[in-house]
Each structure stands twice: as C-alpha cells, then as structure tokens.
Image (tube, rainbow, N blue to C red; front, side, top):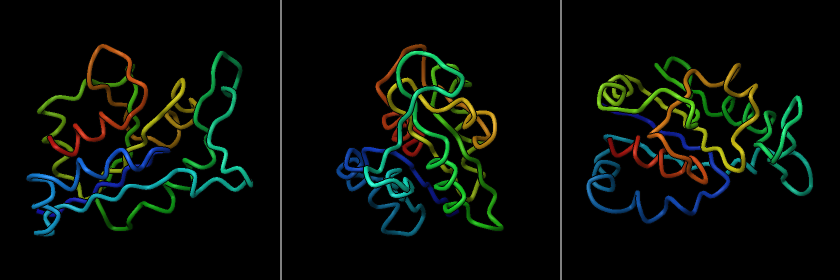
Length: 152
C-alpha cells in the first residue's frame, strides 16, 4: 500500500532529520510512502512572502492567512486520489489508533501545520476536511503533530 503525505508548514527544515532516519526512511526508499514537506511561503504572493495576518473578524494575535493555504491545497491535491486535508488544532478530534487506521486507507493526506494563534477560521470551515488534536495541551505549531501522524 502506498500513501502520500504532504505537509504544509512555515518551518520545513524541522522535518529533515526526523524523516531521514529509521523505519520512515526505509519506507520511503521502498516507495511505500512519500513524504513531501512544503514551505507555505512558496504560495505567498507579496514581496515579503507574508503568511500571517490579524484574525478575520478581529481578535488578538496573528493567524496564518487563508489565501496561501488555499493555493497550497489546490496545488497539492492529486486527482483521482482518496484524500483528506487536515489542520492541527487543540479543538480538533483526538488523534488515536482508530483515526490512524482510517487515515491509512487514504492515498494522500495533506496536513496544514498552523503557527501563531492558529489558522484563519475560514481554513477550518472551507478547506480542511477535519481538525485534529494530539492531546489536551497547546503546542507552538502543527509540526510535531504532523510527525506523529506520519509515524503512526
């Protein structure tokens, strides 16, 4: 069984050593899985590659903008694949072995790794198929949850 993982982040270098070691490295070499790390800034269209903004509708802090995420997901979706797009958030469904098994039946999983105060709420309503949480705590971003999902 082959599965393609596409991880969208603003810190792509975090993943380098983790996915180049152990069983994950061997699975990639045997073409059992494909792991692609994408820098969200590649889909930002301004000179500064801006991916954050004030929350749509107001609020404190900064969130990741809708537009670059939308463009990234549109580019990464593989036609004729069974796929899901997920975003990591403490408010999401708890990730467990049952959910991992459900994901294993897909051909492609696009994972959006939020930062700052999260992602623009329109991402969770209109782009992501699911919101996923790895536990009852806050993290600085979605990169560690993405690694957990891939390894599981």
